[in-house]
Length: 333
Image 1 (cartoon, rainbow, N blue to C red):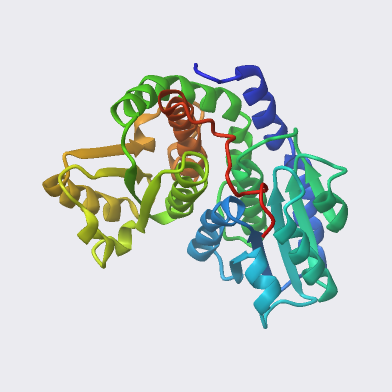
Image 2 (cartoon, rainbow, N blue to C red; image 1 turned 60 degrees about the vertical axis):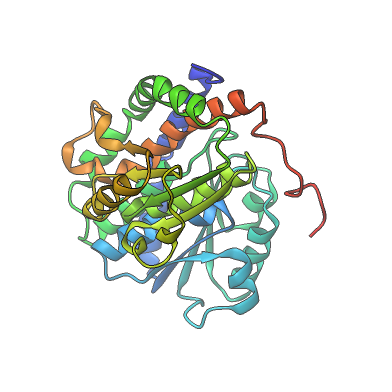
């Protein structure tokens, strides 16, 4: 597979899942101490990647859980943030400035702070109250966040089957490598067909809306300098659809939760307008070792693996490195 280091991918995935004992201990500690609300704080991609877990909590729990943009939280504040709050941060490098400032802001208010990162000596790991460290460069943080949120909800009696689910996550290195293998020819074909496409229209819903936002902004825009429009499938018929034309590249991210019907509705419409519709659907992947009832909540990491293949092939056909930036961490801002 193009640009795919299988041994490193397996090691990173296993290291994230391997945090299970520490995560369970953390949840037990937080629960015994008690807290009133939970903030999931990020910047850019790490903010968007928190949305599935805000969504999971909203679906299952009465606990107030809010995804927050680090810089906005620091600048504007939140009246519900205080000594009875817990804030979780994620950062691959552990150096994100906006997140660091948000950690300082939270700690000044007595908030308990937690971080998932890959570097124990990084500024973020050193700044928070508790840092849970996986293998360097491990991404995404879905494994850690899924373990944390399902364990937390389970202790509250709001998520059934946690032990079974957590046990099955041990299969993820094998599961996601097989996803990558299956996606490779699909990704190569998409890239070849879209080597000269300069604009993509992306749609997703449910727990895939954050992923849709992330792939549009952080990958296609930031890493490939492509123009995109991103729309929640529930909001598709309220504005941006007027941009669609016969040759518009439409990418639909389809999962297996209740929002699937909303993206189905979008698909029926866009096929009447555009001749260039691509669907990346988690149902196309067997996910051997994962029970049917848990497939839906794995959708973001499954499609992250699929589009990881797409990104590498776009890099190849467009001769545009995924590491190339004009402004991000290049210029002062």
